[in-house]
Structure formats: C-alpha cells, structure tokens
Length: 193
Image 1 (tube, one colour):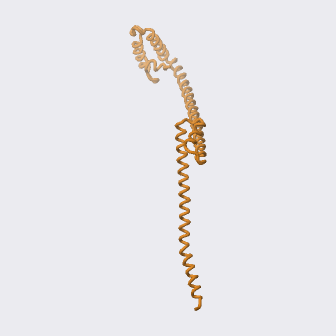
Image 2 (cartoon, one colour):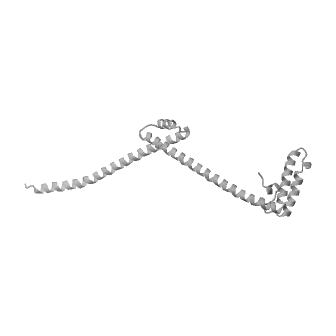
C-alpha cells in the first residue's frame, strides 16, 4: 500500500506548495473525464489523491499522519529485522543439519570402504540411507579414492621402513666383517708354527 506522499508523488519533506502542485498534477492525470474507457479505475485513483491531499494539506492532520507513519515504519522495520533474523537462524540450522547429515554419510561410506567393499556397494549403502543418487555417487567415489590413497600411502611407508631397515643392516655388515676380520687376524697371529 502506498503512502500518502507516494500517492501524490512527493517527498516526505515536501513543502505545502510542492504538495499543492503535485495534487493538481495528479488530479489532472487521474481525473475520470480524462480517462475514457477506464473511468472506474480513474475515479478510485482520483478519490485516493483527494484524500491524500486533504490530509497532507492540513498541518495538524499531516503532523498526526507523520507521527503515525513514522511509528508504523519503525514497527514495520523491527518486524522485518526480526523476520530476517529468524530466517537467518532457520538457514543456519538447515545448513548445520545438512552438514551433519553429509558428515554421517561420509563416515558410513568410509566405514564400508575400509572394510574392503567396492564402490558399487558403498553407493548402494548410501542410496539405502535416502541419499540422492548424485550425492551418493560423489561420496562413494571420494571414499573409495581416499581409501585407496591411504592404502598406497601405508604401503609406501612400510616399503620405505623396510628399505631403511635393509640399509641399516647393510651398513652393519661391513662393520661386522671388519670386526670379524680383526678377530681372525688376532687368531692367526696367535697361532704358533
């Protein structure tokens, strides 16, 4: 619903002269005699313009309207802010719930992937949890890829550890051989011919 100022097409801080000029202009534009074919619509608009001018042209009525309008605008703004805050809370709660559900599905997919099940089984399990097909496919693919990556990393670490152990053993062999050679030399020197 338009304010009285909007009905006349003026600013809230318009002077009396500006209101009078705007009234005359709007009255001429919406007069039923000038709108042949849509007289009923023009008559209703013309009546609104007359009522708006009657209130805004009288200083006492304008002051009352402005105070009520300002109060109503504050109430409306407070209500709008409250609705926005409630909507933000609803969106945050919905997002938190969606994230929790997603995390639960990823954990379930990882559980089955680490048990050695293939992608199709993981996909089927997710579908059984009422997960849509596209999300189930993405989660299953990611879980299997992560599991394979972890297996390769673990295998690489074990191989590296085995290589380090073998290298350490090889380093010990020359020292042991040198030690055995020294013992053998002592033994031979100790023999008397």
